[in-house]
Amino acid sequence: MGYSLDNQFLTDEELGITEIDTLKQENNRLRLQLNEEINKNKHKNWSQNIDNFVDKWFETNEENISIGTVSILYQEIDLFPNWLEKIVYKKMLKIVYCFFKEIF
Image 1 (cartoon, helix red, strand yellow):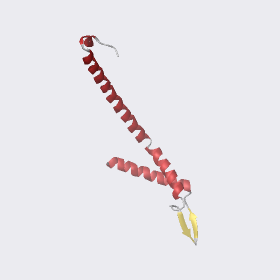
Image 2 (cartoon, rainbow, N blue to C red):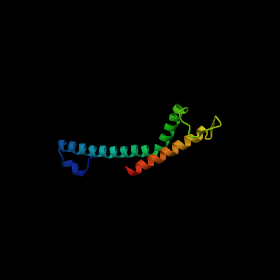
Image 3 (cartoon, rainbow, N blue to C red):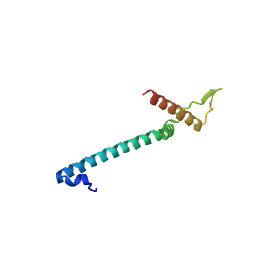
Image 4 (tube, rainbow, N blue to C red):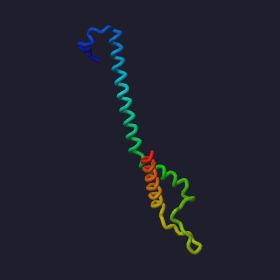
C-alpha cells in the first residue's frame, strides 16, 4: 500500500487505523461480491438441480410410480416410457419452483 501526501503527517497509529479501515472496506466489498456470485450460481443451477433430483428420485421409486400405466383386459400397458415420465416430472417441478419463486 502506497502512502499519499495526505498520509505523510499522520502518526503511525493513525496510519494503522487508516489502513485497517481501508482493509475493512475492501473486505466488505469482496464479501458482497462473493455473496452475489453465490446467489447467481444458486439461481443458475436450479434447473440442473431439479433434473438431478428427479433422476435419483425416479431410480429409487420407479416401481411405485408410473403415470403412464393402464390396465386393459387384465394386462398392464405402459403408455409412457420412463424417459418421458422423467421429463413430465422435471417440467412439473420446474413450474412449481418458478411459481413459488414468483410468489415469495
